[in-house]
Length: 541
Image 1 (cartoon, rainbow, N blue to C red):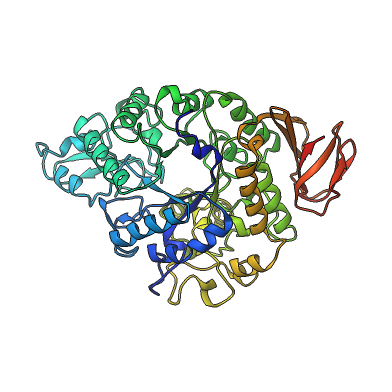
Image 2 (image 1 turned 90 degrees about the vertical axis):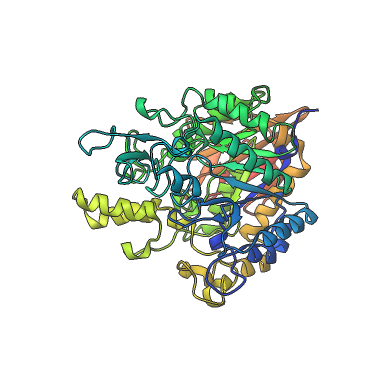
């Protein structure tokens, strides 16, 4: 039997703990808050919780700057709380996937505190140091958060590398001692009973800074194969790597079982369909719909029989998809369901980000004081210095800022959306009176129940797991349609991606499996008029 097959039938739900549910009234979501909502996740039907970092951290980057890989941040609870969560999830048939952040640590991690003390410290080589000339950085490498990727350290007169915040120094993966520390830590978490790892910016661990190689370095796959051998390779876990710079060739290397690396990766090619090539994400353009379809199809075809896809629209680093490519006003429910249909109908493991399943939207930001994320704040000040207009900066932030994903989960229409009894660490979206879990559960036609049906279909219908993908209408500017075929079954997924009605034709009849509008049980598919954001899944008969 093929190794680690369970995740092919699974659906993963990402929890951003700070914003999910606060159990003690301090305004910060926590582990016990998650435990109190397991009934909800069980009702939805997800199999895996991807838990964004809950480790000890100074929170320069909301927990992705870890100061102790073995400790839990007090604001989230205790190790006993986490053990209880793992145990209770197991009883619900849900696995916990931990966020593995090993490209960098916090500058408050004991390793770095030692490393910066002197050039001959035993921990010095755990990080990447260069001298630079005349006080200037060693080279022109830039941080993903803006500015130089090098920070001067007065203690030793050298610069250390940080591809993110200056409080997130990059680890030196060429040092075998570093890798051994990481293997020991991973095995400790595996022994605790977790179900897998989501690996933060894992394509950067093979970096070669002197050659300005940030991603996909020459030793990257060697390191991952060593990780596989030394930790999870003989375990029944789910492993997914965040790989912003991956192409299909690399995607196969990562996820082909014969390579013995990872089960799948997050690649972001499809999420760049509204970006200007060679520019930053902040330089806005309209969605290139044909590019979006081509990207999805390319990955579906390239990995067929070789690797495995992850399927996602949202995460903690991306704005809300219903605001980005749907209609978060008049057709919020219809477009949220349509976007879910496009994604969940494809081959791969679907990921749902908290609130996506109730159609949560971007926040109506009005000024820079509304933002909390370091990336957003840095971008604002950089572009102000460069002479950008305030309105243009705010337009970019409102569209693309990570803050959009980090507003508190909207549970009901009570004060602070039921997220906390205190003052929330971050502002609640004012539309919580209308968009919340309680109202979604009370409405059988809600986005929530549509997601629940999609999740159940993946468990019940092998064609959704195993079926071959074929893109239809590749040049159509409004329709996203494809088939999935397995053994003697063939399904058609057809979606109107836009507001205007459009005609669609396919020479067959179809038994309707799921639709976001009322439909006849059987459709003659050679002439269908698709309504705004209409989505239909049919079994061809």
